[in-house]
Image (cartoon, rainbow, N blue to C red; front, side, top):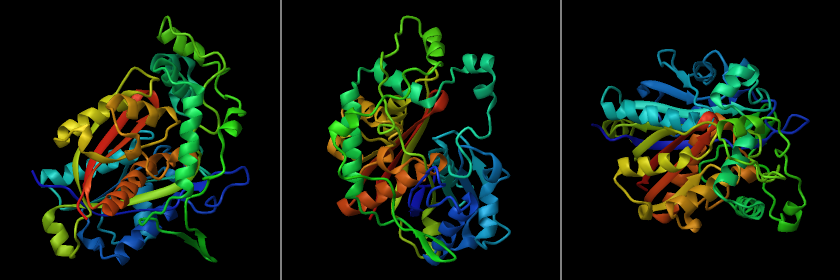
Length: 393
């Protein structure tokens, strides 16, 4: 099999969704992605060398339906001869796209695949496509669908995490994100100039007292009855556990990476930033958010490394419970986890998040002089994905 190298990994800033629309609300999904494609070309990626484009999108509805990957390609002025398509595995969509690109290159069938993701939650709200499991009560019960925050509270309760631990992680996330610097962020521009240059949302002055004062928001959700029916003997946490501060911020963003063979890099004159060493997709009984544990272990096993070999862990903060759970269950040094913060403070643009974690990890690995990174994301209906990348800079 061929080795799948990462030659570039870029992302937009994460722009918060607000009631008034948000900073990036005026930029449709295809334009968010097209800006990154133009930047890749400016950085030496030859568009005519790309064999395929795979883009992760969680909510394939409205402006994000109709193969937004192909639309973005055309909007960026790339050659008409390049095929493009989307994949949708909810929040895991971006890692799915990356793994699919790596598999294509490793098979030897193609030399270069552009992988990434995009989500404009300002313009296409989560569940805006009204999936059948969310509107049909019988199907919802059969699939275990519940509000994603109920999934997070359930997972935290089952694994014994307290409200205080969840709040403490949120404070950590804000403090680290507020001090973060990234090399792979490409500003989003518009007719009047730069619209957004950096991630929004981080607050360095967040305190435990302020977090403790926030009410839990999922404790009274009627879909707890569905969980109690699926897991006899389970008792919901009385007051709820997660708050708006320990949930991932809604935001807009895009990511794009170039995955290719050794020969492709030589032909383009590009040095690899990293190597895709392994990946895994797993699932548990819905609506648990703990399939991440097996996904991480399986990806590490397939990469041929141990937890101790991981120097950078980018665990998507799909609520505070996710990084807390993975850090504990893997026996990971917490100082290697989300070194510069995460989604609780600066947002989770669903389909784009996998590529954002990759770009962040490669930035951090470069500063460390190499090593391995583990990227993990959970998703609705019990899904999870993980990717292991080796830094080569």
